[in-house]
Image 1 (cartoon, rainbow, N blue to C red):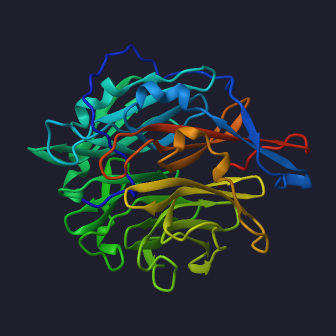
Image 2: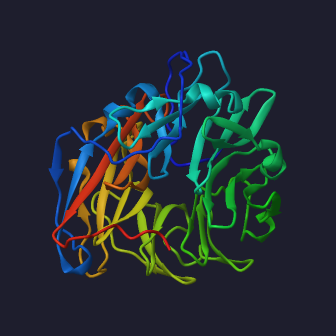
Length: 409
């Protein structure tokens, strides 16, 4: 089954401890007690300089993803929610995993393991999108039980889980849900089915099937990432790259650097999109026009999973294949000015990512702190496992007072 690039797995037995949880957490900020490494000084708003630092945050989530890997994360201003997978089950079918979920209070030092809360809805499965819309979390992914292989989707309201799998299951027949996004009115939920990539729009209890609109959709294609910029969507995945606006889908794959691969991540900076994927490439998107992006340093045998806006540009993260069963993480700073070179920041990543890759990235904002979280897997054989979750935080300080990372439009 195709799916998100480098979905992490491992090979040990697992026991779930039931924990008492409360997700309605009010955080004043995030306390860091980790050694940071100064990276570079991109520009801040108003012409000031920002110093970017990388923080090793793996320790706060290790118990929830050891073994396992972080596949997705989101935040609601008081809590960061991290989702992913566990490992291959020795007693189960090939590629069977267990889900993993943790809540990290933005005013606390350690995450709370919530896996027991959602595990019944994702048997032998995994979590891929975790998205907050202002009132509830959408959590989706896959189940891989022998009698029930397919998608799963729930909403989390506080500590109450509402199962909505039956609402969307027929649109992802024998497939999985890899990504989701919120546009202020409804959810775009996407992934794959036996026929290829699949997508639906959920709003007001109504489901609109978008799959017939997808361009050149073939078996084996999937959608791994969706992004909203205030007026239109971008969709990317294996064999899939399109924009969606006012009910019309535009194919962006022909002529892009991703014809023989796919788009796995992207971010809007208020003016244009930067997207990345495989082969190891970046591209700008202006409207429905794709422009070749800057070249990435290092070997070309890699891929980009995560793109996140930071002062002065973007962070792009993923991995590089070094040889059979050998990978390493990759992190680059991409300046907002296309004339400036890309900076390779991989050597600044925490050692917890060694032997693994960056799978997902997102901006986290509370009343007292703004940072980018980068989640993934480390210590992993990409074929056999085992591995464990890895997490890094990127922060910045600006010379210009009152600076804040721009909110999405």
